Image (cartoon, rainbow, N blue to C red; front, side, top):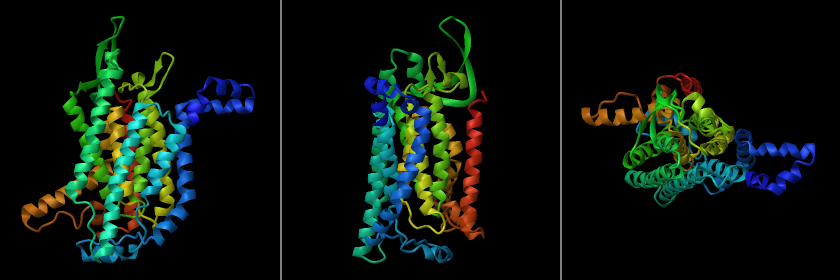
Length: 404
């Protein structure tokens, strides 16, 4: 809203009359609004957090962690009755900050908000059903069935994939280069040489142009995969929120790189990554995500006062997947989100090996953060080391942007 207000000719003229008000014109710059989104979203969560947590406590919306491992149940018994569904703080802050600071006419911003709200609704339904099932029948923790949740996630991802693909093809049809970039698989670390309009050879990112079905399939894989991966990671105080904040910050930078242009200078072309016109507005959504996760970490750090639940983890993972789809940086999300990938792989390997060997296990317990916890690491050690690894992976991924 602020962006649209500042963008009005009469408002710009009015603000430009004096030096103090002229400073507000900086809101027209996406980089400033992205950083401001971090601060704004953080403030919303921190200021509203105590009231929301008290409300969750009065409604007895508390977690009852239970695992098929007696030693792990002993380690986590102190978490009983800690309020969950704190993801409403995160999604609310992201949604409100985006409405305030982003260009709402941007197609990608609109689709990001659809992703956020739809996956939040799925998570909210799952958390609420678990709560009401427990009240009706003590000891029961049945939310949405796995196939139901997966089906809803796939449905959301398919719709996002179809609309994003059609927009990339139709919007940039006048510039075939942009159309290809908006729907291509970007191979990092490799460049090719193409002829420009003058006939000279210039470097270009290596792109594998995807058809509609392949693009939608990849969208489903990224959004549902990372949505569930963040959900699996959300098992320790501050683990999912801290790791997500770091990954979202990396993608805030990547979104600016993907869509930034000024006069004849296009940053994406300089760094040889796909140029996605108007994709830089997603940096505001990513910045809001960083601030919301940091604000939530204020209450979620050990010992946690609130858990995010599926209400927070599903939309956070889905948004990360959508950022990667728009910026065409799926490979980099796998690198930056390596902790999420490892958590998901550990569960798949554990389940597969358990069924194949009729009862044997690879890890002490899955997801893998519980394996380390049972191995002697304290919960704080597991969480902080996951943050450190993610920060290193983010630095590595950002460095590869220039390694062409």
